[in-house]
Amino acid sequence: MSYPCTDLDSFMAGLRKRNPGQKEFHDAVQEVAADVLPFIQGKEKYGTECLLERLTEPDRIITWRVSWQDDEGNVRADRAWRVQFSNAIGPYKGGLRFHPSVNQSILKFLGFEQIFKNSLTGLPMGGAKGGSNFDPKGKSDHEVMRFCQSMMTELHRYIGPDKDVPAGDIGVGAREIGYLFGQYKRLEGKFTGAITGKGIAYGGSAGRTEATGYGVVYFMKEMLATKEDSLEGKTAVVSGSGNVALYCLEKLIQLGAKPVTASDSDGFIHDPDGIDEDKLEWLKDLKVNRRGRIREYAEEFGCDFHEDEKPWGIDCDVAFPCATQNEIDEDAAKTLIKNDLIALAEGANMPCTLEAQQALRGEVLYAPGKASNAGGVAVSGLEQAQNSQRVSWSKEEVEERLQEIMREIHDKCREYGDSDGDGEIDYVKGANIGGFVKVADALLQQGVV
Ligand code: NDP
Ligand code: 2IT
Image (cartoon, rainbow, N blue to C red; front, side, top):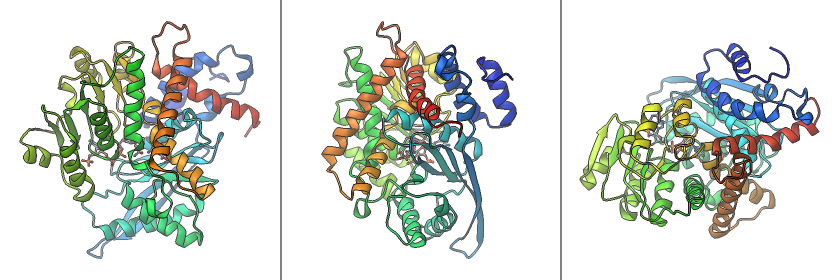
């Protein structure tokens, strides 16, 4: 391969060879490289800097064993990683995921996307991701606490408010963040904002819990506004029933849309009358407090439960995949388009396969996660700012700033994704290049590091 590589096929062939078996990582890089390589080409300032070659190689990956004891006294051993991808524009920042499917490929794809997402927020945050194949499902609070304490006993060496600031992701919510922070504080002997998504009682930001889901809906609102349209009266299909999905549902209801589905790994519920405020409160209690299954919604409210199915065949105007990666394949995307979908905003990271993206781009308004789900990490950035200043902003103030940040991300997508100014925004291209330019400038100014 010649340096710098300007041809997508040879760039990807090299990347695949260096990172065998890491399909999720390959896909995430391919999406970015397809837009960034042509953008770099011929621009003198990028010259021989090999920026994309550098950005696809993490600064470091830390991996360790987490030993812990279950309630029966058995000693368990799980794997954990922290992928510190790039601190070009700020301390490493990104969530921790606990799920049996977690492996290095998944964390590398997430960490890589996080670089560009965090850049799009306009806040000084680098890109990272971490997690474990530990499955919190079915574990007691005490088991989760022992796991989190053991995990942090190693992780604490590598994080800190000016170094690397983890947060939540799949399987890591308020409970896990509390246990992780408690152990960090005990080991370090100091109270600093080394983690975000903290409880309000100990330095968390108002509005962080809601931020990702609300942000996705704000982004959708901006996309629809480019077509002089709004969410009022729109039928929405949502997947997932975790943190992102629940607050996506909440904001949709507040803005007059009618969400009709929610899901978990067992299947989806279809409520043609719409999930309203009262039903959502019940669902939050089911999922957050009782850790129940989505099928119980169907039993409670007398609607259909579709076991082992995804909701993409349900007629809708707008769609919000908010569960996990690769949950919409090409067939599902084509079904959505056939059913007259207007717009899709990703709440999850990479929920659409590359083939699904291809089908959606140009056919509907389509927002990639690194733009539309950036509200979560943006409010994490605001939490870091509040912690540094030792202040707490009101929920209204945080929500106002979140809306402003989502508008600015939309503006950046317009700036870089509609270069001919005809009003048709390619949000994938806009987000990839819009995220890249700031990181690239930072790398150029910091020399060969
Ligand atoms: P949660 O753990 O709160 O919820 C995850 C939801 O997705 C659950 O309903 C879960 O169902 C479902 N799910 C997870 N894995 C699978 C799977 N393999 N197959 C089917 N369903 C699955 O996570 P979040 O809501 O925080 O995260 C959801 C998505 O949003 C992820 O892609 C995450 O990376 C992304 N994201 C999260 C942010 C945040 O601030 N939390 C910020 C930006 C993006 P079940 O309970 O059955 O496993
Ligand atoms: O994917 C993501 O952006 C997150 N899980 C949130 C990361 C964070 O640091 O708040």
